[in-house]
Image (cartoon, rainbow, N blue to C red; front, side):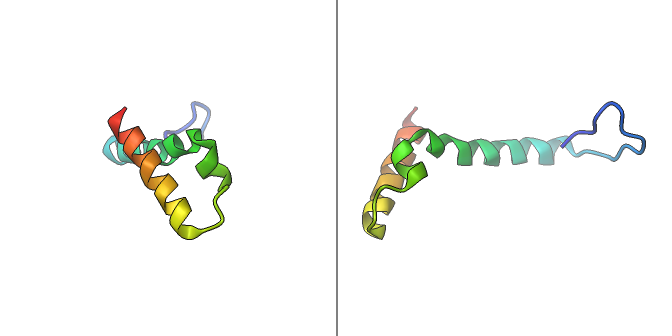
Length: 62
């Protein structure tokens, strides 16, 4: 993450790594829009996996 304006000893920030980190955080945030996955309503692992795959396909499509 970038430095704050009032930091006494600033450190270097790799913009490329920060951009990749942001993409990964967004990738994990998108499935949370699907309440069924976030709260894990499905008790069986196969049903949960099917829900995750369906949500991933929808996110990829949009």
